[in-house]
Image 1 (cartoon, rainbow, N blue to C red):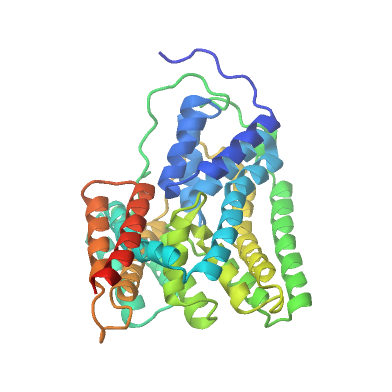
Image 2: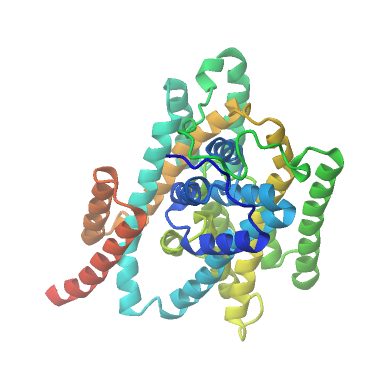
Length: 448
């Protein structure tokens, strides 16, 4: 039976403790993280109602960037003004950053140790299956008609056959959606994707009919202040990097590249990974293709947004490019990881703090746009290309002229069956594949 009284007001300190806890338990990718927040904030604590939660989530789904982190920022801002949003969003990311810095160091120092190598031997095919499953999961939601299938196929051909840059694919798909919506609006319309509100769980602290707090009401002056502050922080950080590293320095290149990546992450982390690969592996050579797969495996096994794989990319780039010199490899890697994290997530905070009042003003009226519908369809083709790229490096490590890595094929096939047929969770899957990889890496040399 629903409770009849709303919970007591939540202090900033109490909220801070929850956001810190969330940063350490937010496993399972965006779907798992959103589910955790729904359980804790809507059902258990009743800090926010179901409808207000979904309303905020729909806005975050429209934005480039990690929607779960942006949702935490939005709710923190709604409850405790700008500082609440900054704390909620930052604590969603910082535990993952520190964990990935430590794991990246272990990877570089001990990656050739048989124990570590065996674990990654099993994780790599599991990651390939996870990326393929992500393409299927997004595709079942986005490819609702022949037009969407056509856009997905065109994006796959563009990036696979012609190596078209990811930003161009996003721009082209957005233009198709914009133009197509005028002539065929029913083709490009998107549904909410998360369902309607469930039965009432009782009054919430921020309920359906709770008036918008003063700080969340739209003001042109406040909007200007947020935009100026966000741009000012970006310019200040970039100026410091240019002054200390030079215009062509590695950290400056990372700051600029990951700013662009932050503005292109429509469709989640899997969608932007091909762009990160193009820039980090092919253009700047901060790491290799196989290392990128290893980084994604680490990102899957740590809390926080999956896009935090960029911290691994930054650490390896900072270490291998010796951004602080050969005597400070760890500090250089840690600094580079922190730099790319800052530039990747700064736009997310600006989007929420600047756009939140507009969302509150449209409570109950916010919908998805046709350009986003087309972009999401294009993302399916891009992710499929990424799955093929990973499969190539995992199954044919010496190229197509070499032999097929049958143990990797076996692990990857089993992982695919576990995901598609039995709906196994990410963490149990990765754990089982890591153990299988360790066992096979020990057993095979004994049999030869």
